[in-house]
Image 1 (cartoon, helix red, strand yellow):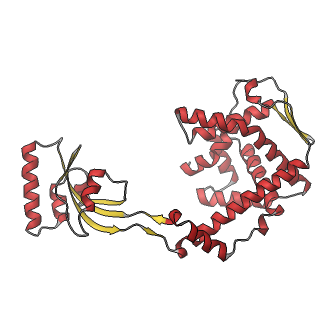
Image 2 (cartoon, helix red, strand yellow):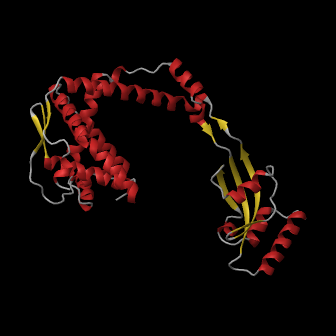
Image 3 (tube, helix red, strand yellow):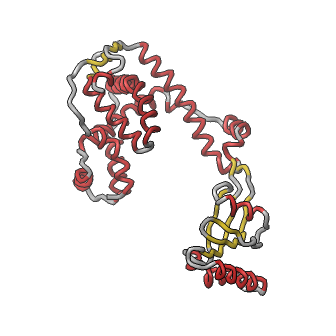
Length: 323
């Protein structure tokens, strides 16, 4: 199974993980529905698995500790949206079909049975995964019909955002380099010195840098004829970057000693720091503004929905019941 497909179903797999059983209790009442302690624990486990794919160690512990404090509130919001979807009789069956067809095409599956088998190998129940996708689509459907389809981003907003946030669209300076590298681990100091002098002499005589890299370099630079690649400013070893900053395109640095050997660098191209053109970032800005408006309207909609609903929280910190 392709790696991207594994990522796609990771969260749903986490939803199927069950730890120790808990004595069930009602955590919250949301209109005619309830959230139980077992419901909460399942979502808590899902939250941890999700965060564990992004953080590690103490950072994971801290982020998880803070995130679980708002988990019950998120579950209540999700339940309110699903209740609203039911009231509005939103149907997402056609969207689910399109999604499955898209998966078959993207990941090379020939049938739903093949998808089921692939998920089964990862310990994932297809129906659980499908139910999860349906719930997400229903929640999105409520947002869309409530205000999403009415969100408009006009040209003036886009232009003003571009002018007011130039730092967001800066493209860092970059270097394209070629290198001749001599490893100190494979040669004596005397051999290194002799090779450096020989290479420098041949460069002065007009030999091509690429030919010398192929003939003299150690490591991968030999096979690539010196191709080192392109680097954004600040990402190259500082010793090497300082030397490159002192030369012009087409020129070669002096020999540079690093912790693992000696480098001779040729600057093939250099792009100065610049702000991306408006045309190149227009779509990106439109999406940023759209998302900002959508987030604000979503918060307002959820607030109104909660005010109109009956919500009773019986266990404010449910995770303490099974820690």
